[in-house]
Length: 414
Image 1 (cartoon, rainbow, N blue to C red):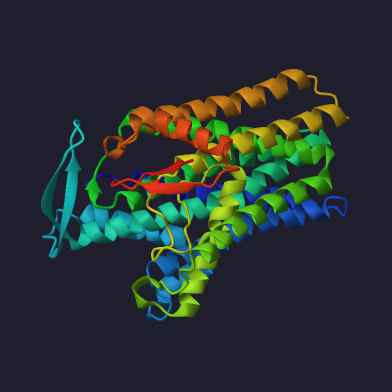
Image 2: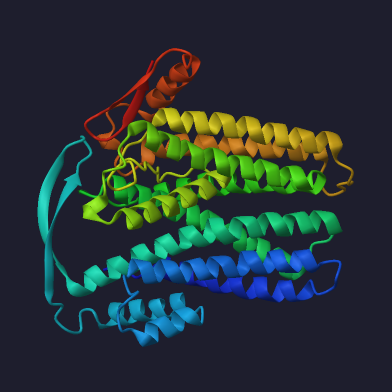
């Protein structure tokens, strides 16, 4: 059993960002900075509330008699309490016999693309630790894109407006950038585990490093572009974000209504609960897509509400459009900027942001082509899938159809 490092990292980022956000908001106490105070508090407290709800929903404790757990969540200390539970389970495991809980079947992959089905017993402690680990992954995902990313853009805008970067703001921006990068990385891991839940696989260190570089460059470039653009076009920045959010939300619902599959309720759940899950997943997917590619592809017409296929066409279209949007925003800022940047030239900054986003796409290509833990299940290479996506985009005026291969990779054909 591995030491729960990811849970400790999630807890550290959650606590550090919350404390720094609350302290920094106290410095915006003057009437001139009142709006900064409210926004800093909003992006600090909103993810705290959503994370508590995430833990309660994940453990299905709404109507259970768990007064202590509910008290810690009301005090916004739910992640700390859950981490203590995890450490207790980890250290007592092995000192006493772990009662048999269930028998699971997994397919172990080989280098030649084959697989062997194996069975193994899973104890109660192992099941609880796995459940806690998944809950912390979802919590990191929610915190990253509902709190860390907006907070990072806000503090970057304030720093540009004041032409000053205080130590506390610098620390908060650093923690927020680490948090949103880590949340995006956890989103990738969740997507792979959801798409290939029947397979037993492990991530190599090179895969983690490639994922980290991909997400760090992609998110940092995107956030800096939005921050610089907001320093010149405050109102238009809200319009850009709102249009992005509306476009992704409408795309999911239009695809759902087009498939006419509203009767597919997951596990016979009520229509009200199914509609709520659709709305929550759609909002989470849309907010994430504003800042980076969301590997958890929401398909509201599916019974599980998540498609278990890799649509190379969608990835190609997303990154092409996002690259064009970033270029347009940064060039508009370059043309209408009024501030003087002495430490780094404006022209060099524009080139750096565009090149950085391009390099992030290169790391994405390397990950899917060589380092994906289930790449042997792809019937075609990632590069081949991207080329198919480009051909489909060039023929969008013609009727198109999508075919799904036996391993769940969806390929668009003109």
